[in-house]
Image 1: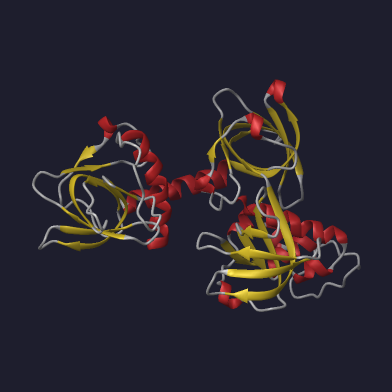
Image 2: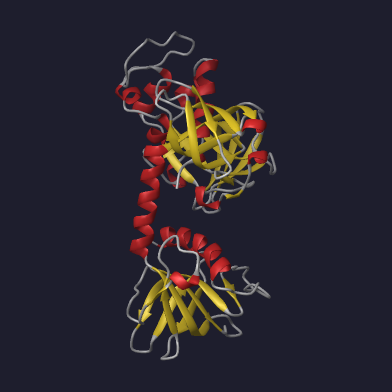
Length: 376
């Protein structure tokens, strides 16, 4: 629950910076927790003490602040997506609960452990979940994903090889002045971390997700929003694992060097299933794949089920402690940082058959890593 609320709180911080008229913090908590300032705390409600009118607020970094409520505290609820204060809804001290995201204003104590609240803003956990579900469904039904193959700045057109179960399909994304652009920064991990961007940020080879409307023939796409990023995919075998530090060392198949992979709590860890492996190699589930052999033409149930991005999003998850030295994995990350130390957006296990097979299937492994751009 706290992991989900931490993600919601991260989005919450940007909202409040814009609409609650909070001045820029003079300093952050000694621990480096940016969710705590001299006059505010941002986090999720983890404990209610009704007898003492106290609320324990836990930040995304795990810091705890006990917020004291009083008769003079102003309580407001922020409907998801609202950005103007006059649209906030007045509530009472009983109209929130454990799990809700909150932003409290007051004067923090010197040890930054307590604060009497003058203002207490709430975003309901249930409303956050509902909004996230609606967004996810919209991207699933009205979204496309692929690799940029050509750019026409004069026409605001982006040509991508869209990922489909039938293989890459060229689609022209025809942007307009009303199209919203967002861009992954180096070491970004989450879809929600993408910052405001522009057409000029795009380059051939970038990964793109767009939300909008496809033409009747499927050849063109009119986007409401475009999210892009420059990613890399590393493949190889694990040589060391330190689950306590959240790190592993990968013997990179391409560079033949040892790369440190940092796996954070927001990294996605997914296990390749026989069904998706069959979709990528055209090998029927349960049948071994012989390296170098021509794969048989089959109509795999996995290939018939739809878009490969959606299939990737539905792969089973695992934990870092389940991996072992010698496992073949795929790691995707943003470009732009230390080449010998990367932060994993996604780690995919069970990719051995792709890495051991012909060059064409190794390219499919790279394409699999590119699916980690993910969704909301």
